[in-house]
Amino acid sequence: MTDQSSFDTATRIAAGDDGTSYDPVAMTLHWATAVLVVANFTLAKTWDWFAEPTQDLMESAHMSFGVLLAAVVVTRIVWRLIPGHQLPSLDAGWMRLAAKGTHYLLYALLVVEAGLGFAFRWGAGRPMEFFGLGIPPMIAEMARPERRFLRDLHDWNGWAIITIALLHALAALYHHYVLKDRVLVRMLPRRRG
Image (cartoon, rainbow, N blue to C red):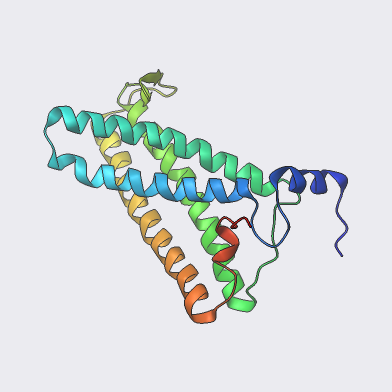
């Protein structure tokens, strides 16, 4: 039995975690991240297909979801760092290192993506939109070539996120259907009854 502090135990109990699966908070943050990443990527890759009013609405939704995604990612990192929310890996050796590396890489890319999005928008001297509210620029306006470079980095980083997230999902399916272990099931809500 592991030696846990009362704080560790209290946070696990508050989260409804039994120690065999991720707690409901971690699951909610994980799946919210996945939905927001796919939604934002889809919006960014399809808004050019639409006329101006719809395109503007899609771009506003992209920014709002981006701000929300940034908040979810920060919350997720903080939640993961709180003692008592880490589960032992079911993998060993290179698979464990690959899983851990993939998670850290995705966290880093998501943080960078948010920073690039804010910098690109604020660099144009415009507020970041969040469901109709404006978050005023916190950096100086940039020249057009610098903004274009930030936009390109934001786009390339988005492609990296979606590619690595897809590989992450395929790895989870491989664990579930080929290795027949609990890696995927630990991130799915438990059935009651």
